[in-house]
Length: 68
Image (cartoon, rainbow, N blue to C red):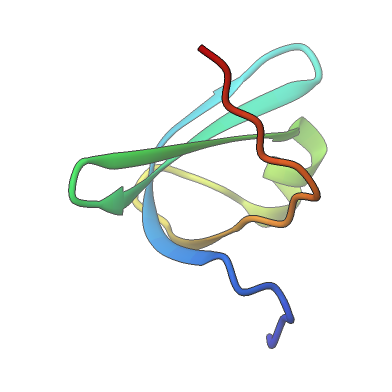
């Protein structure tokens, strides 16, 4: 699959934690960096996500805000 999004990181799923409606998927993208994505449980099930799966984290956002 080709995408226009340039912020893509290959990684490995290290955790899938499902809540009532949302799953939090933690992906190790290397060098000790973990990215967490919140997706619907339905999406996690459709993708068949499980620990150890190789995935691509795709970041598309109009705003990235950091406060301190």
